[in-house]
Length: 89
Image (cartoon, rainbow, N blue to C red):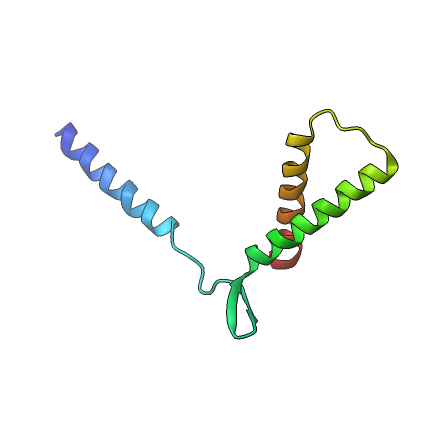
């Protein structure tokens, strides 16, 4: 009796999880020279360019970073996610 109830709840949970994992109606993409690029790829490339420019500014100002191997990937992620949220929310 308890095993049947657990099995029924497990199946209902899987059905609910499947319904929550559905995708959106269309993916945001850009037509560049006849080829569709996903929007996240353009945000990632822009985030990398902003990170390189932030590195240049930090070097010009003379800011010494304690952990540059952690700082620059984090800056790239912040710029990428910020662009994504700002442009495609």
